[in-house]
Structure formats: C-alpha cells, structure tokens
Image 1: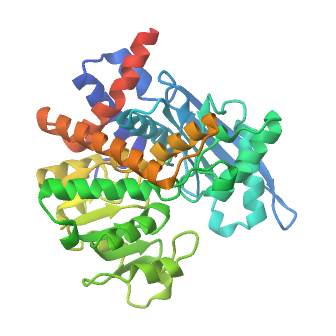
Image 2: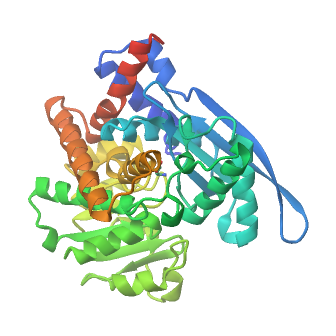
Image 3: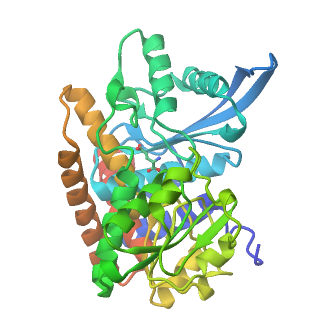
Length: 417
Ligand code: GLU
C-alpha cells in the first residue's frame, strides 16, 4: 500500500517505535530483541457445536508480551479480522498502557477469528467456554488476566469466569476483569475507557487553550468506548457533531442528539442504519472540528487522509488507529496527538482496580474508582507530555518511552538481558 508494503502492519510499526524508544532510553540490541516480540504466543483451535448441529472449528490466540513486571493483562477480541500479528501488537500495546499507568502488569492479549454478529447467544457461550478451556494452562489470576475488548462484553467475561472456575474447581474472580458487578465486577469498569478518553480530551483542550464548552467533537465508532464517550462529552457541554459505525456516519454541525442515538444503538454499536442522511466514514474523519476521536479499529488515519484532517487534536480511543507515517504528518501539522497507549488506558486501569478488589474481597464505590482513575491518567498525560517537550520527540514515541521504561528496568534487574 502506498509503495510501502509494511506501512499498515501494526506489529511492524509497533516494533519500529519500541526500538526507537529503547534506543532513546539507552538500551541495546538484546533488550530490543526481547521486547519487540511476545515471550509467549499460543494458537488454539476451538471446535464449537453450532445451533444447527454442525461443528465449526474456530482459531484463537493468546499473546503474552512480557512478565518481568508481573502477570500479563489484556482483553480478548472476537472479530473476523483477528490475526497473529495483530494480537502480538495488541499485547505490546497493553504493556505500554500498563507501564504508563504504572500498573504491576505486563501486557497480554487474546483474539478469536469469528463474527459474533452472526452467532447466536448460545453459540457465543460455547465459543467463550471453548476458548478458556484451550488457553487455561497459561492464564490465571497471578499469570495472565483476560478482559473485554472489541465485540466482547461482561456476559462473555461471565461465561469465561465460570468455565475457568469449573476447571480449577474453585471460585476465582481475579482470573478475568470486566465482569458483571454481581460476579465481582467493578463499578465504573464498563465506562472506564470512555472516562479515560474524556479526561485526555479535557487535558488536550487545556493544552491548546480551547474551552470544553466550545469544543466540537467527532467520534469514529459507537461501540463501548465511542458511545459512552459521546455521552460524557455531550453531558460536559461539548458539541458532538459527528459519530459513525460500520455502516456509515452521521453529521450535524449544531450537535447530534446523543441520548436519542444511545437509546437506538444495538449491542454492537450500530445505529446509522436507521437514518437516510448519512455521510461516509472517510468524510467523517475529514470534518472540521476541534477533537477527532478514532474509537473503532486500526489504520484509519493514514498518509492518504492525514494531510486532509481538519481537527486540532486527535485522541486515539481505539488501539492503533493511526499509521506511523500519519503520526509524522499530524505532528508536522501541529495537530496534538494523544496516542492510544495513553488515551485508552482507562479500561485496563479500572480492570486493575477490579482485580485488586477481587484480591481484597472489598469493593469500592464508583466515585472512588473515578477519582483514582483520573489521578492515574493525569499523571500519565503529564509524564508523556513532558517527555514529548523535553526530548523533542512526537507524542507516540514519548508514550512508548514512558511505557516501556519500567519493563526494561525489571528485565534488567531480573538479569534476563
Ligand atoms: N481491552 C482493553 C484494552 O485494550 C482493556 C484490557 C483490560 O482491561 O485488561 O485496553
């Protein structure tokens, strides 16, 4: 693509920035070789009895980037485009998020190649349980702790928890996070990613001197992160002028009726199919606005559309929405970029709170969760912004430097490199 076959390979791009970050921090080739790839990658086949009596065999993955700091942690996505390189890259990004937030974890990630939109409730249950049986040897509350990600939710976490507890023959709520509250979930986990992105938007606006009440926000994606974010921005007085889903996008320069859209969206975040006057996803990204939030999937802002973006700030709620070349273009154009590994760390931070509460058997209020979340994210933003300014590197490289530092130190103390 664009004469650069590798430009959109998320693993390759991540490895490039990991290398740059480690070199800037003064580490050599061995550390780079270790941290550019997961230490462990499991591929599994999951036979699932479908409702029509046939058996379908699904492929799944679990990647564990590095456990020098502590157990690995990260979500499981159910999506037709899941692949090995993507899961590996996602596990590295989890390490960076945990590093930036200073959580006692390394990164992990899982995925199953499937389309949950085309599966029944019971088929999804059997797939979720089958996945846990397939990976049970390498996961656990002190080994590797899964969580929700794209198209997985608290119901899927509940099935996975139940399957794991049956295999291990004891109740183990700390095995997985993002659970329903009644099964040991945390208040504020469902909305945590969006809460975190909202905090980052406020900080970025402050840095640019734009009042929140005057901000025009465009959000690509109306799933867990995008939809709650639209609500938070709307409630805070900002104008959400554009949103999108897989089918198309909606635009109203006076601001969209977010409560109405939330009410009508389905559980996968689809809502635009109810409207006739839609614009395309490409048009949405190029709208004149203050804040653009890609909250869907990878490689949405590329060298092709980056020169045409009219946003002043880009806050990445999705994992990997901007290519490296696009990062360079946005930085050169003076657009403030809050990278994914910082902006979307809210989810894993509250997952950490959930795990802590499970370990203690003592549960916190939503206010307590929100206050602690905000504090951690603000510290993360300040650190990354400071490295960006003092070391003269772009925001993504700055985030990688902050994110990988603790892990590299832990690796060295353990004597691995
Ligand atoms: N899947 C989320 C992420 O990409 C959350 C992971 C977690 O809560 O462990 O950050």
